[in-house]
Amino acid sequence: LVARTDRIIHQLSTPTGGTFIPPTVLRVDGIAEMPEEIFGPVLHVAIFDGVDFDTVIADINASGYGLTFGLHTRIASRVVKVSDAVHAGNIYFNRNQIGAVVGSQPFGGEGLSGTGPKAGGPHYLPRFTLGAPDLQTAPLPLPGPTGESNVLDVHPRGTLLCVGPSDADRTEQQRLAASLGCRAITGTVDTAQLSSGGGFDAVAWFGDHKVLRDIRVALSQRSGPLLPLLASPGDAGRLQLERQVCIDTTAAGGNASLMAQAG
Image (cartoon, rainbow, N blue to C red; front, side):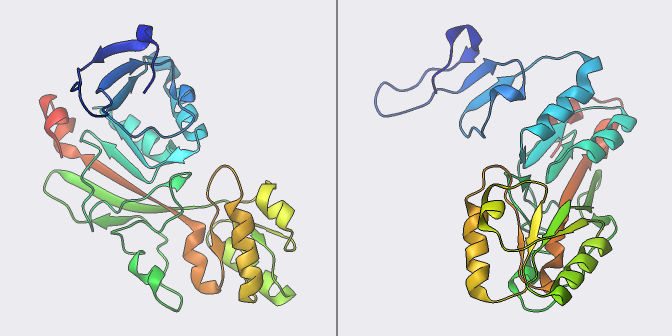
């Protein structure tokens, strides 16, 4: 890690031998200063005014990454507003952001942080089977310890590009999109469009595997969010974004120390 010394708030020492990155706290102006995910003993701190809260959330969504989000607050309306606004796979309130439990906090992101289905959730194992799994259409409460609320919800992914190959296939693809709240547009297998074009968030092709491979290769060359490919009606679940919201409800009272101890 190379950092401007004027941005270092605190930094620990490292052993003299070997290759180490010192645990470091850095001052930044906002998430836009981090164009990619940074994994390491690094904590970035940005200070903002409360009136800019909506702008901060919009900047987070605009980053393209959406794995985990956390917030500490005792304002119930803010919990509702943020859980609806943030584009992240796992959203935590008043608890830590690690230690996702299978069956309680299915784990996985969206955008540049994954395409789903979320590991440890009800849609994960069916992804490895043949046939069309039952699709979730309403918020699903999940088990958890007393004082913790866990809810898995689904949201429309966006626009599905229907490329057939037949008119009947495109009609079925449009029907699947509409049934899950997504918009549908039609097109043909154009590798240039698939590798760099915009205006769609997923692609559907129900034809032969050779063309399917060509589509996968073209999609892999895209920059930006990872786009799912539907190869059959059984893949309709890929048109849904899964977002899990975990709330430590015990920290909503008067004991603020629970916020740091939760989870």
